[in-house]
Image (cartoon, rainbow, N blue to C red; front, top):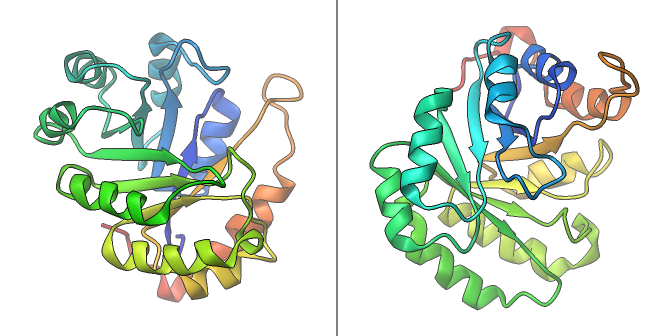
Length: 219
């Protein structure tokens, strides 16, 4: 059992899926954007999910409308959906009436923190959590102390899943500083079918493991 919720982003193969399920992550995400390198066709998502249990499946969607997203969510028996930053408010409201919503926000170095806070406040009632993605633009924890202060406030006000360049050395400081709702991690390409190295992920997830006597099932 892990001490914090973890989302495995953009799973593309069964090897990753079975690894993260064994590590007891909370969510397992599948990219359903055909334009993305991480895209997994719905038929393959369904086949992977048949091998797994005790994990919540999340569809990661492009700028699809609510009707399309809900149809796919029903087809794949998804437990939640993840939508992009520019998803319309009407679609968010429609989705959250039917299924939990995670809203992804990819942040850049020139982001206006005040405007971002106002934007999150305006959508807080329609989402289960915000996935704040600093990783896509390679923004690291120690790179900008101003972001650290902003994140403390954001995490106290909203459920935040953090995606950032971190490792087993910086993770303790992050967890001690931020009241996070969850962390996002990634797998990667298989070296051969069914074969890959998980050394870096092992270090991260081993740090997050609770001692058995303290393990309590997450809601």
